[in-house]
Amino acid sequence: MSGITFPTCPTGSTLKIYITGKLTVDSNAWFGPGDGGDPLTTVGKPINLQVYSSAANNAGDVPPDSNAMVNIQSNTGFIGVIYAPKAAVIFNSNSDSFGAVR
Image (cartoon, rainbow, N blue to C red):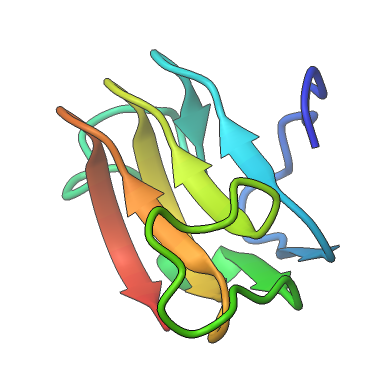
């Protein structure tokens, strides 16, 4: 999933994203509900953005398969829930996150 711009969702709405492959959130981006401000004071709640991935890495893949990962790039704000039990989930440098990852 690349080069896609998500619309701003109305306050209180919920967005669920289901993916089977790679998800990359580009550097210097905001990915989550709210205004893109400080994750600890923004209006959005993590449960309002849910990402589900069925992508799977083989046990022991080092580095992980680049087509089976959720990759949050540098300087990115993320508020949400990521459920990707068999995929690599990578938060790069200077990324702010608030929510849960499994």
